[in-house]
Length: 548
Ligand SMILES: C[S@@+](CC[C@H](N)C(=O)[O-])C[C@H]1O[C@@H](n2cnc3c(N)ncnc32)[C@H](O)[C@@H]1O
Image (cartoon, rainbow, N blue to C red; front, side, top):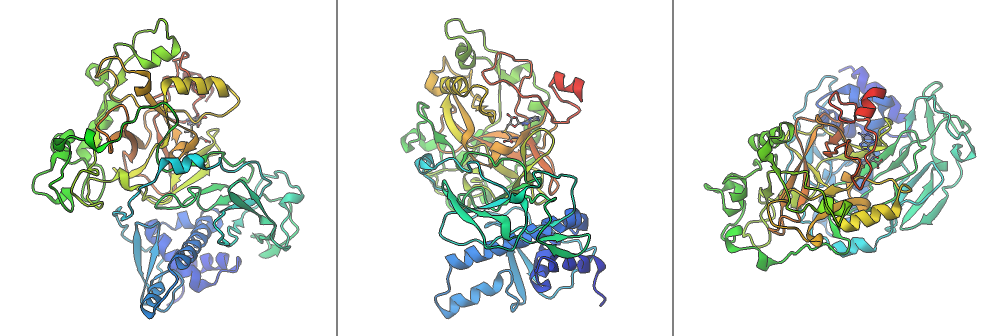
């Protein structure tokens, strides 16, 4: 059969980077499957996604290989199922640790192939991470020359990557000696807890003349980090700055919340009442004929489907509460901690806090497995995400590298747990010098009790310690993510997890956004609102509306 011209072109591009066809073939099949046969997504930017995927999967395989060094003949069989193993009939390409896609080895790649996409499946990895571990780590990425690649300082020599097929860009950038591409030995140095490798050994492929050029200084090499999580999540999260010009974000990646100092987060088994858990359950609570006690919070029905998605009905209720808030959707504090932080002596009356529907997940006192369908947020990330430079005045943003069905769990907003007063003090201290990542108030239950003590009025700040959610930008009203409060380890509603789910189907490479609920007219708020560039027709930032 004559080779598909689109396949041939893809191989041409990758061959120019020294990647053999037989290594690129399974990656191409994999991407076609993930993108539902949409070639445009693969061809975009001169096959950038394809080349990225190749290097990522290669690195995954190498890391996996090092972790599971074969010790017996039986073990030696296993690597046959991985990428680049060309002997087996089937190859399993893993996109993250929790999803696997099987691909028949010798299937011809068809230009218009439509592959089914696996739904999110269950990760078997239990996340038990001590917050204190993360407290010790240093902030990542101090100032460094570019272009460069950062590698975890784990003693494993990562391969240099992302010699991208670059179209000449109008960006003439620094165009300085530091951007020259030469064939000299790699220069390496250590900064903080990451090793830095200069990209001076990278070849650049010039489309115009099909040659490898070691002299051209007019191009800017993109910056690419293969995993900003430093291995702390179930899946890697890459970072890409196509311009190569942006300073890398300075923060410490922490996959879960961590108490800063004074917050009162009381996690103890004794506080979970017997009727508030399902100690008699076993296996998967979702497969029970009658939902267990943990479903009581959500009206006797679990909020998740067997596929790990948020149920349509639950999602629609949350969306309508957010879009059409009615009077009974608000609670008012006797004395509002937010107002108290603005004026302690004479706080203004509470402006109201939106009531939200909570999810309660099974937890330690429950008898079910870690794979129970009512444990989604606590098992951590499963979606393939990338932090990228938006280029729209919003700085970094997050996008999905695969299509996400409606109701998919994306991530939680993780950061330091601060009291409102601590947040206020921090804001005053750092003033306008530091870009703030906009903290989140955990106020879904404020107003339901008496006067909240300061150490019970909490918020999450991901400025210095946070997870991938710290890069998710705001969009007024029609964002594609929805925040849902999730009770996991404490029945106490002062503290909960803030989980982000897709509120509709999200296309691969679409930016993920979330409505922070900012009141752009509240000039008294301790954190000054930014000028919104969300681009939504429903943008609430009136100043921006005028200028757009
Ligand atoms: C949670 S962070 C998001 C990541 C951020 N863009 C970055 O580069 O680190 C929130 C900050 O991003 C910026 N931002 C988020 N959404 C925005 C929007 N719609 N318009 C303008 N800036 C936005 C603001 O500076 C805001 O304080």
